[in-house]
Figure 1 (cartoon, rainbow, N blue to C red):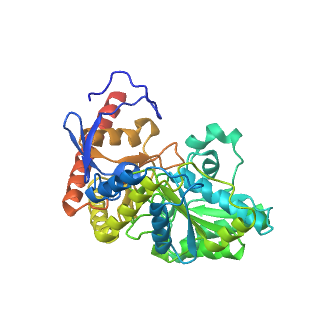
Figure 2 (tube, helix red, strand yellow):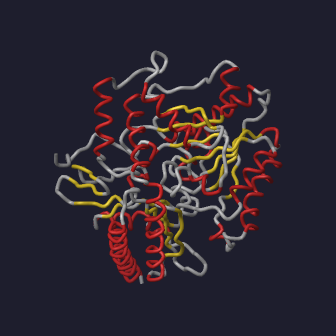
Figure 3 (cartoon, rainbow, N blue to C red):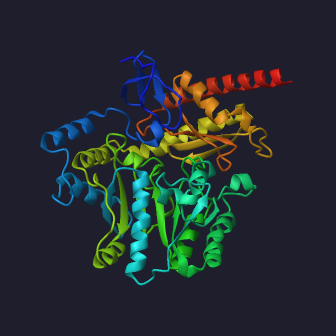
Length: 451
């Protein structure tokens, strides 16, 4: 199929891309035969790579049996098995699983469960959910109210109840040492201050990405931060929700990123790499006591048609089996360490790179005008789009967002599939090197014309 001149599809913009023909492993091909290395796993989704034969076979077997069974009519074997497997991977006490189709649905489910739990235990005055700025938690209005990214939220502000925010712990921008526990305490104590200023009796939950996603670009919290926010939430009876939509599934070198600090949330959400792009799938995993409270108080007033879809769950089961069989968490840690070291070597060569950060195969680098001050590039340069387009032309797919609240600053996520090898790392770095040189040439030409 060649690309039609007129498309009846629309998404965020009118930008067109080549027509995808096939994808295998870490590579994708368009219909003209051009090959691309998927350096961002799509949108940090395709954790185990494309077209894994064992996952496809598991899905075929399920197709021969059934592709849909409504949860009010039947229990299905794939859903029950995946729920048990997921609960076994989750922190102690998080034994109850609610399946959804994606990350926004998972977050929406978590905040509604938290609210119904508060009502069930006689604390109906709790309704506020604190989140961070910048952050991204989904595109539904409930999840968007928690999102701290003005370009995405501002048009819908009149339709949402505003929720309190605290600053994300971007120590590198504030000139603080992320390896100093005082830094972690400094940012975590902002949570306590916000709880006290809002009124502890009104605070329902705090939602946090253990390692930042698109809005902060693989931000790793400073030392002691995660442990401290757990202590604060416990002290004030506030539920802690870990948004592991992007980090869950092994991408950071642990199946759940919260494991890096041995911190257990009360509710956890996962999607993206959970079924690794083979089917729409996500999950909310909740502490058994919370679910008991809600079910004993009339039931969970929430649901989605495709919750627990047997075909999606069979894909999820096969993905988990592949992660375990191929030891992909460990590979993410080891290959990610190599990739991070190579990105830092690029930083040594290019003064325009102001920071390299992340964990495992969730990594990012940030472009700046001046490394000493970390002053961002002029937003008119549109670097966060330009570099992505240049890399794409060079056969490398990367992912970008704007660092400073969405209006300026430019960071780029490098998150290839967890099956990546040192050879793939070398190919990624070669593509980035070429693309950065071309980007700098383009900037130089623009500035020469302007002068």
